[in-house]
Length: 410
Ligand SMILES: *Cc1c(COP(=O)(O)O)cnc(C)c1O
Image (cartoon, rainbow, N blue to C red; front, side, top):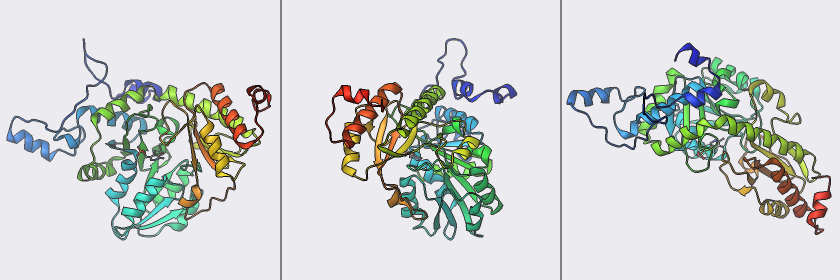
């Protein structure tokens, strides 16, 4: 990469990286290479390709990658500031790949208690069963993690903010302690993407993310990404292949397309989510708004230090402990679809109970937690929808539209 390219801002990089390099009369986007067989002209060239099959950018057989996938991986690598990226079929596959690539029986693995629940399940079902000792830790442990390090601690798994509960982890402090103990750090950066947080610059060794969310951005494909520095790249690439992971080139095409508009979409998600969060903080039906970008968030200062912004996903805790009322609120929303995979253009809502997935910490909130995702709809329409549904669900007195509109909630 030339010096001038290295100086480009992320907004410029996403417009330029991983593109076709053609001259006159060529397409601006890379073609999709749907391939299993790669054909060779001689025994010598096929044997040479086999020897080099894990080298970056080398085509050998479909499962090892094709030029379109390599170009997208390079774009992500440059955004994250690593040596190489491996694209895998889903975000969860990305979360699990470093565990499979580096852990062996007898190793000790530290995992944040706020980890994405399917990652926790995968660790419990497969990693623990293969003889790795798994220990969950308080996401807010910070430098205190040094006290959990053992000679056999091989890896520390981080996720910031935590899924559902949005604790911001002190990445620099945790990574420093892990490095001193000789442990590899892996961080799930799905919420922020490279545009809002740069985990490698904060000391993380391996960044994993679900491109299903913001990068693809339209809720119509799935993809995961694992970015690392040079010493970890080859073991990750080999593990992905020997596990049989192969990212679909069509899904990579959609991810490359989504990447071009990521900065503008993220900017809008941030603005709308913050406006909704501030609005909801004023509602008496809401006990607490959990959004790292609000001064009321307990980790707001760390978020300000380490993040360039907030994305569109946050949570509220309703005042009511009644699941029936919470369900009435959720189901009455017209502009928030009830579903899991945020990162698209549509606003989403989801009820959740973080307590059952905790072992190192307690989740002791009394009200019901509702996760909200701010899509790209107009913020005033979203506010009106939330206010209407929350009033209707928590107040048994029937109201007319005019009554609702005249309350201070609007
Ligand atoms: C959604 C998500 C994943 C998993 O991604 P998929 O593409 O759905 O497999 C992993 N980590 C976090 C934080 C997520 O939100």
